[in-house]
Length: 202
Ligand SMILES: N[C@@H](CCC(=O)N[C@@H](CS)C(=O)NCC(=O)O)C(=O)O
Image 1 (cartoon, protein in one colour):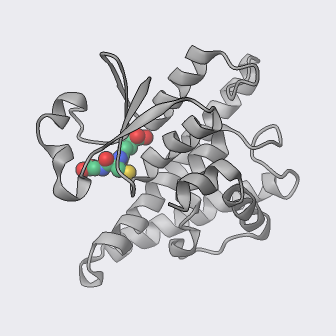
Image 2: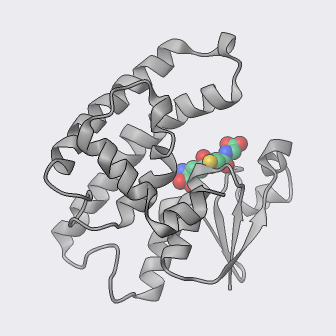
């Protein structure tokens, strides 16, 4: 059985919870008290020296980084409907979009989310937050192009990208940027998926 080191407010951990439920894989959750900085101390630092969740544990095998965990489980289980296509060029495009999800949305989104949620307003780095909003705005315009033609980002079905975006687009109202129409409809569609609701509505 798998174990997942996680915290209930961790967006990156939520991705893996959504994935594990999507694949019906049995697992237990090991709570890491980020609020008590348990992640910055031993023994957690020997589980992940970067002090971050999620971490997957399978017997003695430990793996961190949400996308690496999902990729490992996909490659291990060889599902009949793989999330990473067999076709090399299609897979390359999906990997490209995955990297853009991380750098153009989740990373700048985390800057805004973390500040608004945990930092008193007088201490906000407003320039950094504004730059992050602009970057997200540009990214959403690019997604809008795709989503005005298709319901989902890749091969027109709920898949890897939706699993990765879900815990981040949940907070789209906080991003201080215009949300284009087709993107907003897509967000609502993703939020309405059973596995997404199961994890995010907790
Ligand atoms: N790139 C990592 C990011 C993981 C991450 O930033 N996790 C946050 C929680 S959402 C964390 O553990 N933060 C604790 C800290 O940095 O002290 C992934 O994809 O898993």
